[in-house]
Structures are given as structure tokens and as C-alpha cells.
Amino acid sequence: MKTLRDFIPSDFICDVAGDLGCIIDDIETNSKQVKTKDALFIALRGVFVNGEDFISEAIKNGAKAVIVDENFNLEEH
Image (cartoon, rainbow, N blue to C red; front, side, top):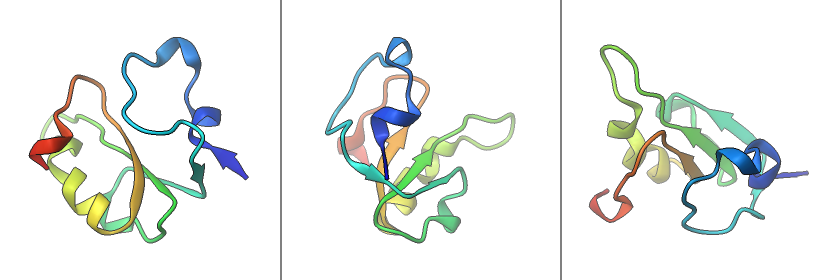
């Protein structure tokens, strides 16, 4: 089993809210594809769509962890 820490090199981590030791069994960039309670959702920022807009849906679908590319206020979602 892999933990969130296994997917993120320590030199890339700027801020962490939560446990880097949580178990991750799936990685998704599409919030609709999050199907397990131990999924990692990566909120990619694209040209037309910002993955941060789908964080709430990913969490509702079971994402245990989320990676964003900039400061993000989880309290708003």
C-alpha cells in the first residue's frame, strides 16, 4: 500500500493540511472518476477548466486527499 507521501516528493511540498501518511489506492484528475474512499484527486489547472472547481465533487465522491498547484482555501468548498 502507498501513502500520500509516496506520491509527493518532499521538495515539492509547500503546505500540507492533514496526514501525509494516509493510504492512497487510486489517483484521479477527473472528479467524476473518484470512486473509492482512499482516492487522491489532482486538481489540474487547464486552459478552459480549473480542476479546483471540482474539488467539492471529488471529496463528495470519496477523495481522501487533494493536490492543488497554488494556495487553496478548503474551507470554501
